[in-house]
Image (cartoon, rainbow, N blue to C red; front, side):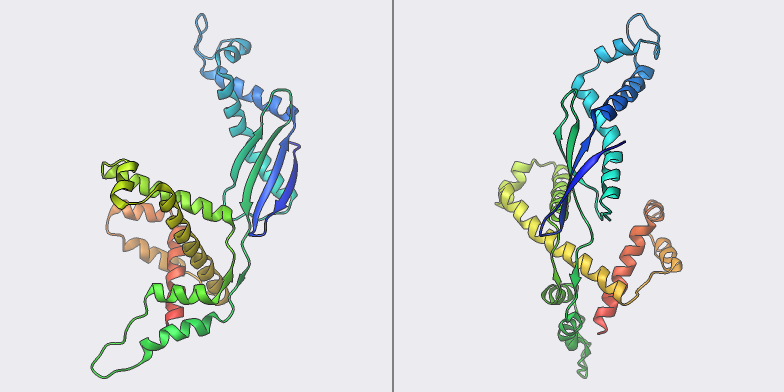
Length: 277
């Protein structure tokens, strides 16, 4: 697929790719889509999969065909644009379809981003100011443990980092979707939930935007510190965590998501390192 692309980088690190797919590629993709429908088509007078291509096409909704074509061409077109522009995206793209007219090139915009620059600054000093109290020995009293929130606050005050808006938007949408699922499980509607909490959807989104920025920043910061300190996770540690699962279902889920397990363990080891500063 010969596509063309234009790249625009925003100040916050968001990357915008305007990708143009030639009409000739759309025609080829359309043929493939129609042929796929032919295999499953059951039209009067024809056995399943034996109807003429033209009749199958006439029986299909044009908007539905365009959706199928988009699903077929978007991944490859985006991948080619990323390769052409030598990018290293860290998230799945947010796609905005611009032009999908007949007999014309199609165009879409993909928003993504690379790893943001992280200036750790004097983070050790900031964390040490917090952990100092846990090292004061008072006869007859246990040392006061340092909480995650205290360490997170110290890191956010010490480290310089701009999170691309496209990442924050995705995290806000994830948090909203999670809340909606919880609301449904409670047998409530969104309006009922908002009324009971005394918030508007705009206020709820604003709260999640603030939480998303803090959470994402901490995740990036801990990852950068882990890289700097060469903190690694051994396979034995992953297996031990999986064995500690309380149920067989949980154990299977962890086994199928070892990367996630490793990330959690690495993050915990990084926090342990910080608490010992």
